[in-house]
Image (cartoon, one colour):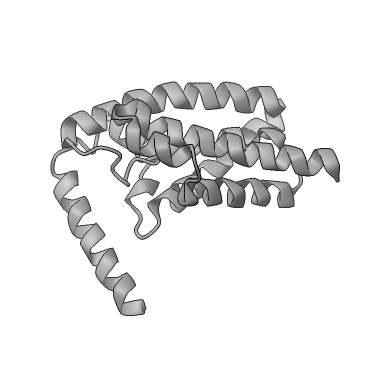
Length: 174
């Protein structure tokens, strides 16, 4: 099992090196699409991207609540669409695992129904990662059938909505 992980990680690093030769690592689109480099961490770049988005999620929640999270999600979605488009144009790769700004947008949505406790932030994080990784229908359908930068972003938005809905249901009935 450990050997399999080592082989997979080595292959991912090789792929990343090949892709990194095609992009301008000093350009804003690169730093935004990789959420300030967190998408470069292997393995589990999506989890790292989500974790690195938590300071923004917490700050927006503390200083502006749900409305700030929703505005942040909308802005991150728009910026992410642009940044992912630029990244895909340069690399000719669709939904490269280094692009993790989509995780940030999804996590912002997932946090809209939290109670503000550390445990609720953790629950939002775990639920978002669960829905993003498992990709239940229709998330999987979107992931497979929607191309381009919009396709990169939209499945994570829906994963965030699913996570928020589960949290909302929990808080509504507990």
